[in-house]
Image (tube, rainbow, N blue to C red; front, side):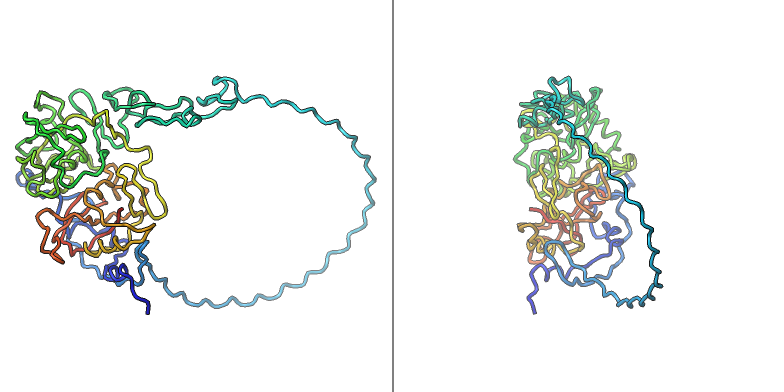
Length: 488
């Protein structure tokens, strides 16, 4: 008998769920990212609307048959009963032969057409001689109407610029400057006429203007412990030296509704500046320290209360809800803006223009049959998640044994997995390039900071996961069973 592979042995222990069961699998086994510690009196924090507070019923698992390490589990086809052969059809009735056709008199010969002298060659006129001869803004190049000069001459446009038909390189929407050297974010966007926030940014009101703030980690994957990236300015503010954002070192000191928290930042005058605002999810996420607990922040923010903090990002489909970050351990959830009271930590500034990674690439994701490459984070992802749920150890073993397109796979960290979340989407909250994505909870390899030992093999007892129904995060015991997606 052929020896079973390591991945087959691992996944033969994994439970399988039917699609309808997978769709309903929620946070019954997971602790919520927001737990209400900073909530208004009498209020109970809830996780996202996609999750149910009702315990998930026990679901009987079935043993997997064979496992293909590159594509999850193979499902054996059911035996198809034999189909009786169709009865012989009776022979068709003989058809009488058609009667003979009467002879037709022969057609008289037609005189041949006289030869026509060949037409002299006519020179072909050029398609254009000037740009004015071309339609749709095309340029006249070598007597032909063509697209932009940057395509024709292989000119490389600057960062945040693109080749525009008929006019060569031009700064992308939301950016201004020299399209051949550097395009910087337009500080007037999106207030300027015809201007909009570029990809990966959210329009946020600041005083009488509106700014574009990053709502995607355009700065790349941050370390789990980002403490070395912060500078205490000595005036109640802290600067992120990597991405140039300035933070309020303290907070509002009181839990507030979302509207009151937003007003608090708008009215804040600190460090000689008054253009403060609530942060986006990606911005608030950037100050989280997943190696610390209660509070889960770097030392520069040591006075932080280990409770929930509002962001400026609404929940898609529920404008009366907004996202919040719980800084006891570092999980995200969303709650009702009026019914829940959370704290505010304000932010100001934008990405440094001189080294702006700025907007996402024009095409962030590129896919093959089995993988998705992310041009923003430089990570490559397993495109189709296996139709299995597994413990943390089995999930890690599955990824380590995956041979898809050359192998080298591992279970992603929480920060890596969060980089796939798109808060402008739901069910699932990620780009459509991930084919047939189930709206499930997915494992990360990141343990909760206070639960590093005591588990199987004296490893962690609790680890983080992401709910791709909405994009929220939570944690569960490592012997629980949730979904898997690998990265390299």
